[in-house]
Length: 109
Length: 132
Image (cartoon, rainbow over all chains, first blue to last red; front, side, top):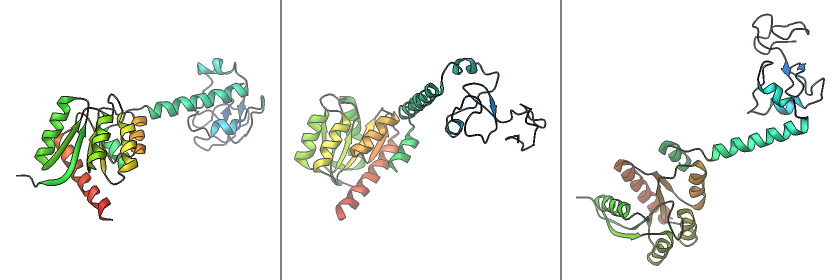
């Protein structure tokens, strides 16, 4: 697998890059399986990884993240629903944020 | 002495102190015809009866809020210039005022220079709109 951080080629068995130590590939947020970064679907559970990777708000979880245990309880439909809900919350928080006079002047041109 | 401004202007705000303050500034800027109203409903009535050119309006008021008043005014007076003067800084509401038809937006409390600068822009915009 190619490390997305330093582009070093690593053996498929490795989870961390031999050059920079970064996590190689993409960990499925549902079942924790290590997939290649270019994989569209998780090789173990079939979760649509493409959809998650191109969600601009998505932050990949590292293997020791405390959220892994929580998120692994959900199936792919529930995860998709959670992503939609989270995006709605982001949008609402964006709308309710307060502006400075300079930011308001930019809006009014 | 400031140059006399012939345009009619109104201050619509439920705070008596703010109406007095803004009226004083507008007199300093040279306005002669200054109307005031203590809520949106009276403000809209006065604006339409007098075809007011420049409108300073608060965001939150009893009877009729600022955005509703602006929509009502815009139906009849598309060429007047509307300046919202408010302490509301939420992006959602700022965008609502813009969508309603506000031309400028001043956050309270404001510096007198900001008011002066906006007032000059408002007069320029009014003249441009009414030359066409």
